[in-house]
Image (cartoon, rainbow, N blue to C red; front, side, top):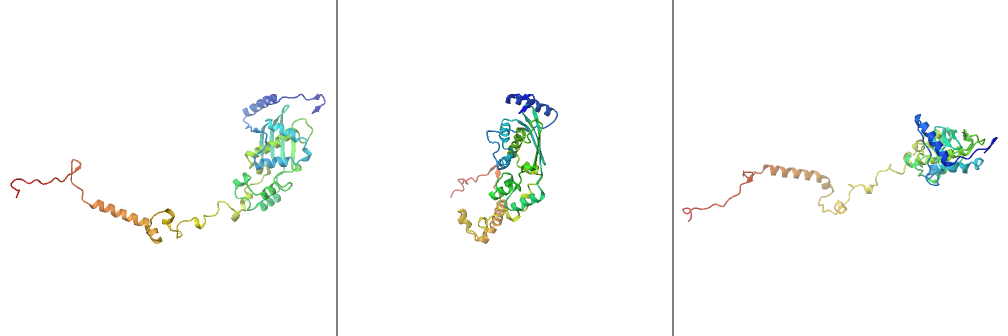
Length: 289
């Protein structure tokens, strides 16, 4: 960027990081929670929601020449704080200085949201499935549809940065927008917060269309419907089906009778804690025949 006094001096990545660390420490001392964007590897986003956001961003042909610098900035850790709230994104980006980025997103209209929910009704089984992006191609196409889906178009976003660059989307803003994609990898529900809609609406009308976790076991998987239990478990069971149902009660009664009989039987006399042994009788001389 050329200024009236000439080109702004280059600031190395190491110097930017030093400035960033100093700024972060100052903000934390004031009690502010800092949430930097950390990219592992080359891929900015790896999950469905993060990739879908970045893909939508790259449809902005008017900003195509600014996006590559933004990708570089977000990868090298220049987005030192990113906060996503209903209808807005606020961030700090480390460049030649520490710049403040503010992005406002027009909320999805009620008519558009109702249309999305109606078109997706019954096709998303659970909130977990929704947030993990595990649904049909048709649902993905509907949610990501340009102009009528969940992702904002260029005219639905307002961009601002405190840097002196005259462009509406400077490299700092581009870095933050890519940072949003990276953040959606971790917290996809933030997309719904940003658009000021409730993700539960997408599954509220699923009702009887649920395919998972709402059906009882099949009849062939339930015991007690006339199966031959002796063959099923490899046991020799002589009772009939009616006797099987009384087996538990019969065993309990038999055990009670055995215990009662044992209690009624006389105990042998004991001496010194040991049962007395029966000794053989010895005849005297006079008693012999």
